[in-house]
Image (tube, rainbow, N blue to C red):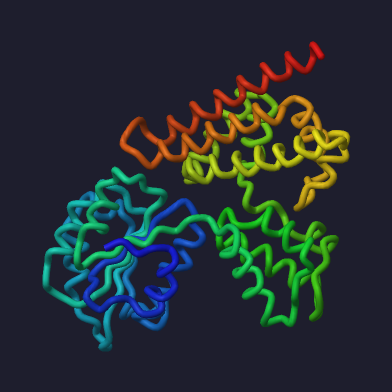
Length: 347
């Protein structure tokens, strides 16, 4: 069965008793690990309990494919339901997990941690189609979900967030749940006392955890620097970031350029237009963004956003691999940026 993101917290707090195994996957590795640990605590009480929790690496099944089924069937020496955690899973372990889902022995809950899996993944299809399995996708926090994480983390410390500070945090957190919490913990320490967190405090303390190279990709694409964009994209893919978060990050950047271009059309200078963006552009990037506003015009920005939306839709289809779709779309936009620069130079 497939668990929607909206239902994920309720499922983690009280998993369906008929479920024998749960696949936790997605581009946000921090959130995936957080939910894996939460499920473990729900069932076994303590992630580190050696009698009720067993952790295996997927590589261990290569030489002993039956080990997972044996662990799932074993009983706890101290009583209570056991948890078997399979880490860093890929499609290569689909066969072993299919055997576990079909078997009736034992009552252990098998938790499977994987990276970003496309819709054609055999592992993902196995869990989404199984009556005794559940697939739980973990995508990067954004919008209201991210704002809720920020408020829930700060509230126990008696802290609130000014609106402009929240806007800045929403623009610079969310790439990874564990990194987001770590940055917020750092902000709590920096603030030091209950009260409202200001924009200056947020900017001074919180790093750009959502970026993980995403800003570099977006800025390089809008600059027309396809070589640098490709290098940053390769680093993101190697780190486990999926194509869709990359496309969405670039889309957000182009939407901000579109807003700035609209302000220019109303009479503001490019520098004034960039200065009016919320959340504010990081100072070290401001010159580049101003140049991008001058390079890209409203109509072309609209076309660029359409390209990105189309690429995201194609990533969810059954065509070329999503990584290829993403790379092609970004290359197309980078080439468009260079064409826009040549046009701007002639004006």
